[in-house]
Length: 128
Image (cartoon, rainbow, N blue to C red; front, side, top):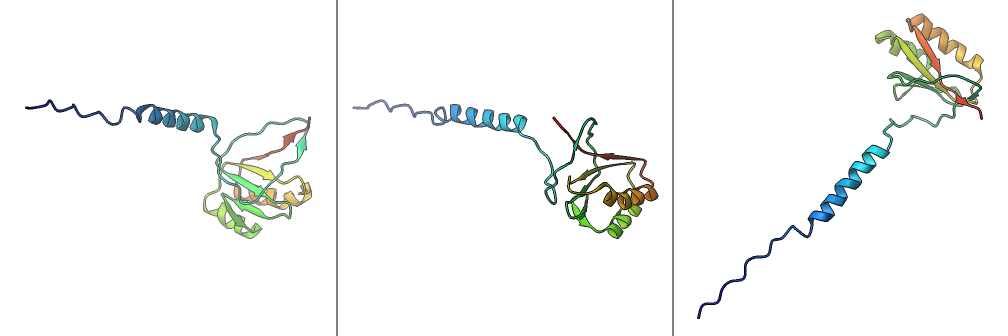
């Protein structure tokens, strides 16, 4: 007597809803998350009454002790001159810590101007 063989059960149909949910979560986190480059050291911008901030490809970080970071690398004031001499940008965004006095930024601004930087933006937080 010959018995009919049972048809093989399809594998994978049970995993399809799980795969769909995983991809939906992936898309959600890609859309909802922010993608910013990590800072070299933490910087807390000072408060301001009014002003606008802008995104730029060329950021200059100034830490609370006056340390500088240019494009993600710690540099000295003389090292900044070398980096600016290689390819001076048209626009620089300075993100300075609130603990940095404005007089400490003057040598940095002078070197940026001497290198040929046309626009400098200082990022601040609007006070509420």
